[in-house]
Image 1 (cartoon, rainbow, N blue to C red):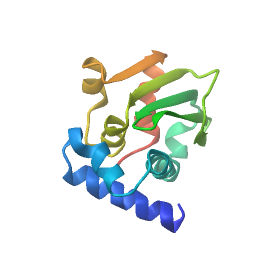
Image 2 (cartoon, rainbow, N blue to C red):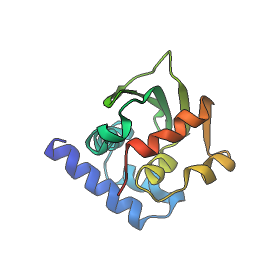
Image 3 (tube, rainbow, N blue to C red):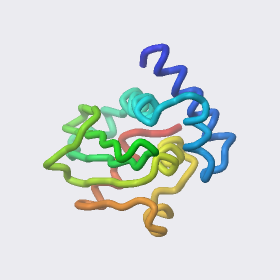
Image 4 (cartoon, rainbow, N blue to C red):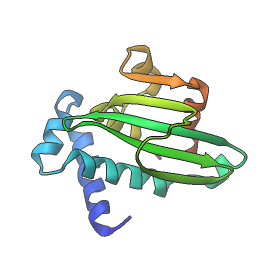
Length: 143
């Protein structure tokens, strides 16, 4: 991660740790971050935390559709036999499309929310292969 993106990530992490979920997005925006900057920092963290060893022999194309104050923002993630590609945009042939709010995405990504609970309460919606979507947490450890 570049130093600017790393600083943003640390700011986001600290804010997630200290802010109630309902106030998280407005707090971060109030700190001068845009939705795009927040997602750029978070997906940079995904790139950094990717475990090639855990993803060896695994394959999947995923699209994250994150609802933000600026409208939905999509990121495509491809895992292919221990390699990973992540970038802004859609994935037309995605194995799974995962939709959620920015706040839930941040909390889930930083280990502050349970994906199964968010799914059971309808706060995460998965179109396509739900089991494949659940594999993502194994490839990107939060600890």
